[in-house]
Image (cartoon, rainbow over all chains, first blue to last red; front, side, top):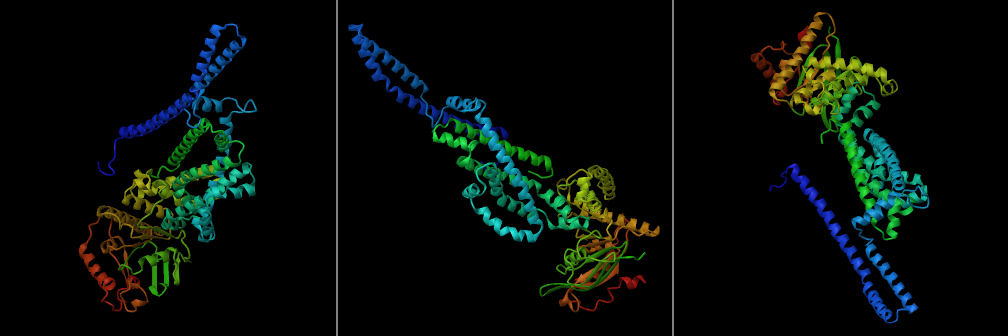
Length: 320
Length: 294
């Protein structure tokens, strides 16, 4: 096989599906093995209890009306049945089996839980996290686009902002979290501010570089000869030309924004995905976290594809 | 009908200690198609940028339509060799782009959307008319990425002409194209010149004044009615390039065969006057366009 040689679509699908199935299979084997071991551990308690029962039954056979013995037998039988129930219910909470993920994960977050009867965890968490993400990203995108395009259009603005922005872009946003907690508090405003300032330096610089590099100056001069004003140049030429690359840059910022949001929720939130993950981490109960991780992955993919679709719709002229 | 649409008065330009242009005096009348030729590096692009207004000359003045050129504006149109069209607009919208930019502003388009939609319909019709003029009415809905180089240059020319500028600058517009396409486009320019002649006969100001920069001497003589030579090979050449040749060129009808004998004569003249580094003689006899006209 030559390097770079393509393969047909059917083979691609087959190989991709195989990887997914292998992953699922490996996890199933691992989780079932651990649960099995847990059950065995609990089941070890049974033989001594059972032998005690046999001893007492033997004694009862000779003295059937001894009330202490009868009581002891009853107690033992209760204990044995409790242990047998424990064996059945034994599960490894760190690596839950698929069945556990369903009963302790999915069912728990979709049925009414918590102090209030109508508090559905999945709904509450999704609403909280999604609203923070969307408001933060909207504000962040608008501000970054505005700043980036102005920087690309006017050199004085570029010279003013670029050094500071480059420096700020290098500070890891998770390290900056403490600044937001102190200055803005721990309410909803904090999340929006945090996402905006986490995205702004990187995205504004990406927009600015695209405005400089992807708009040939001949097109700018030509727009002036066609009677364009400065504002029209910025909107009708620069913005329209860089739009598809901007959508791609936004797609790239989705990941870091989610990282920042989950980290902040982990630390200070009262609801949301990050909060719930920390809660169950402290209980060492992984059913809900694994489920939430799967949901986050699917949501991320969905948002990514929505942006790609949006780009194809708005910019049919831009090749893949 | 000798209205002067472009005038260069003693134009000079330099970059640091490198003198590029010196003492350029030039007048272009309405309806002329002027070819500008010269050896590589003589400063044709610099002169073009000065006329366009993007890099005004450090010395002297350039007047378009009697007004001094300080920045790119409607009076001077441009067609570049590359990157000539807006990728995000179809051919029709590219041609109509200038009308939208010139006749409306961003604010009016936002605040009066319905009025604008009607106006946009008018612009689009006019754009299709100009596309027909350059022979591309069928390609109106294609994006530049879907068009060949020749088609793109035609659309770019229509895009500039629809604004009816005082003068249209073509910066080596056919350089990246193959021979057959180049010939088609040269024919298109000849058709435009024919419209100029009809206008002159009717006593109206001719609509197309064009300055075309080209490397090809054959093209220069065929397409234009006046050839300018810019060269640094003259006495005082260290001070910068200047106009060393300015004479009329024969006018052809679209579809006429090219008269290669006539071409040879003028080409030899041009090689002597413009391109020969050894020939530093005084060039007054070659700069004779207006003299010959009288």
